[in-house]
Image (cartoon, rainbow, N blue to C red; front, top):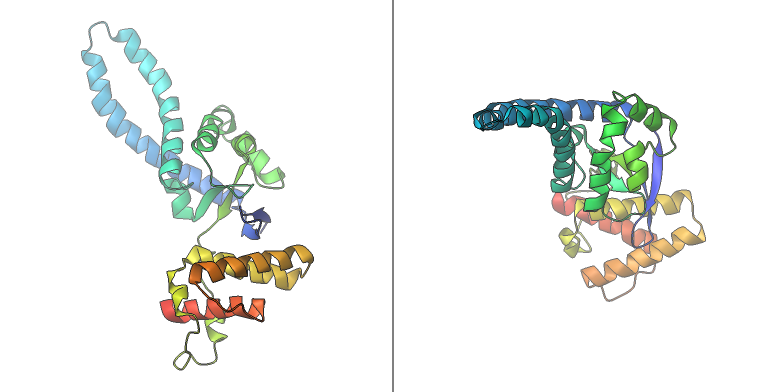
Length: 248
């Protein structure tokens, strides 16, 4: 599985698994099915009847059927990704999501570019161009991704702790959390902490050491921990253990 490192706005590098071509195709087909059903029900049955009733609506009716499928297709992807933070219904069902490569949250213009470029990526080329670019590019990007500086990553399993994380605690029943205020953090926060620890363990260089220091300082402020920890990595691991025990 291909991975990518994305730096957050706090300059912390997090490793994500890129969504595979198969996952993206399945998500697209699900979106196409959902959109197709919605188009038939809403547009054909409701709006189509209105247009038929318009005086001299023959040309308007023809234009409607020529342009609305394409416009509606782009609007579906734009609105669904904006509303669900980078996850259309198809993407959500496959556990994948759109992210920016610079670590920022995708904006309206990013989602709009991705939607517009579906014309070239999938409609005009019948998906061949999109499949070719995703399978051959380093970051699994189609044209819409390249123009918007985005890609699609896996998220389904990333926000879950593994059994090994729990088994590493010697006694769950007798374990007393040291920092009970860790409960206010989210699973996404814990994922970031876990990734920073793993990255430092695999690549203990100056950049990752600085990332650990910055993260520890930020967590001290958020959790209102006055005394600085002697061992920063052990402090982060303790937070992970505490979170697992408190939220399990």
